Length: 153
Image (cartoon, rainbow, N blue to C red; front, side, top):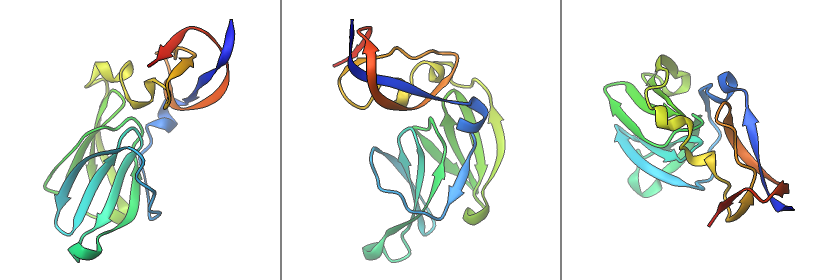
């Protein structure tokens, strides 16, 4: 039987895992952990990437950019290198110049559970949804008619 629910939107893995910096400040939707380095604050946007926040004047902290890293949920910084996950990969990014970030290393399948357990593996709301395939990466969800298979409380 079909009901209204969510269908996964799949991304081409190599494109979904591409890391991109934008000077566009995005709204915080699903806030994750933060890391402070110098005058900048880095805040995870769970599943989507990292907000870059200028904290030069603490009372006027404001978002100045966004690093798209789909599938990310945690960050750590050591020296000029930011470490994060991108679905099941460990990614190292050179942050020497925030305007020109560089992916310097990617350890494939460092987090095997990241293939089947990440932010977008279930839709944003409760109800029925089309069970996602694990051979692709989910980058979002759309409302549609689905079979009554998977259910999120």
